[in-house]
Length: 270
Image (cartoon, helix red, strand yellow):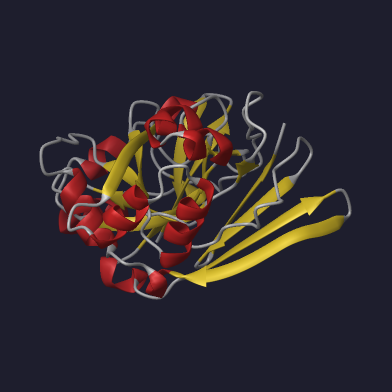
C-alpha cells in the first residue's frame, strides 16, 4: 500500500496506490490509531479518480520530523573527522541512549521536485540520505519514506552545540515521494543510494543498507517517545550511512537523488 499527497485545485489531497482518497481524509486520522487499526483504516477507505496532480511532501503541516544521529559507523567516523570535539560522537555511537533532535515542522518540508537549500553562512554542506520511518501515536512503525537531512558540516564541526543551526533552516528537509506502508521488520536490509549531479555530470554516488545501522528503527522511535507525546504520529529520520568526501560541498544547481528501498526522492539545490 502506497500513500501520496497531491496539490489539487481544491487543496492538498491524499491518494492510495495512485487513486484519490476522500477529500476529508487526513493522515493524522490514521496515525492517531494503533498500527493494526491504522493499516486497516488505510486499506478500507474508498478510492476514486486517478491522482494526477503534482506531488507534495507526504505529511500534514502540523506533523513533526525528528532525526537521529551517528547510527551508522560511517557517520560516526565522519563526525569525528570533522569535529574539534571528537569524543562526543564515539561516545554516543556506543551509548545506550541515541542522539535525537528536532528537524522540521511539516509545513517546512520540501516534497519531491521541490527545492532544497544550503546555508549561505556555511562553506561545507552535504545531503544526508536517510530511511524515514512513519510511526503512530502508540510509537508503532507503519511505513517509511525517503528523506534528505541537509546539513552544514562546517557549523556542526566547529562545535556540537551548533547542531540546531547546522540542521534546522529553510530548505534543510525533504521527504518523499510517498509513504510505503510496511511492517517494521521489513526495514532490516533496505538499500539506500545517493546520486548527486552537477550539470550533465554525476559528481558523487554512494550506497549503503539499513543492515549497517547500529540501532533498529523501532528502538530509535521508542527512545524518541519515552517522554514526548506524538498525538498525530510522527516521522523519524534514522541517520545516514553515506557521507561524501571532505572536499565535497553542495552548490546551487546540484540535483540530489536519494533512493531508499523502492522510493526515489529528487530535489534541486538553490
